[in-house]
Image 1 (cartoon, rainbow, N blue to C red):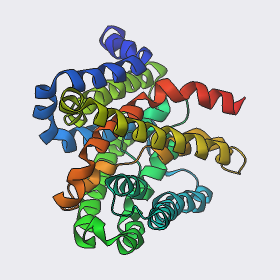
Image 2: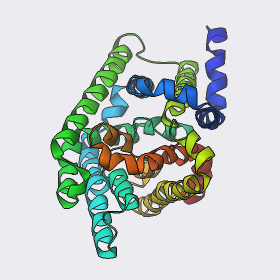
Image 3: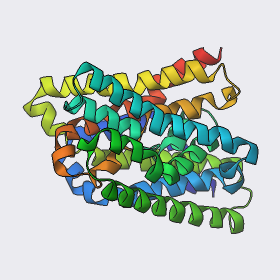
Length: 312
């Protein structure tokens, strides 16, 4: 058994490097990235299944006393923050600019499905990230409505609600299957089995990012200055939100979950809106969505040290 698990243990030990290699492959091999793009929904579902299998139902559900705090963060992240961005955009007179649209969409989205995996790679408990992912996705049809009302250019509510409902169904199916296996087959995984699951999640994330980078490779070759500009915005938004959330959360009663909640703050499932909004809205921000994957997948490599310094 140990020989069979050895490759996964190797992947677990080098998970951060695997994510970087996945990013590089997505940029360098646009043909492969384009071929994988139609299967992104299945790959993301598999990623969520592995995360739920590793965590288990007891940790994922958490204590009932944690529910109000998690719900409060969902409202803060997915409604208060994007509405604040809408207000700033209106005051600055740039509400119709693609940059404003991209940032409002990003802030409106729930956590990415890989947030528990990213949390694992920084060496922290992934369960709070999974709880925030599930609750945030379940609440998305409600939390996004005020944002759609405040910025009508984002499109109709019906398409977004339908997409959010489909995403929630995928999360329920993948998480339910994983929890069933944990309740019947893998009730008490050994330390070696947990390491193997961590390695499997690292491999899955490296594979998923190849498809998500399909728009970035051509942009680097054809309009490098435009790519660098959008990349700078994406990194500032992602890492800036993580640092701001960590600086605030560590001084609150939620300090024990500072890292997973901070990772969710900066890593949102903006790709959901590609299937929910009209092309007239999403086409101008496609490059941002691709660039946004870079800080997302570099989070364990870039932010692990920052989180250690904040804890100290």
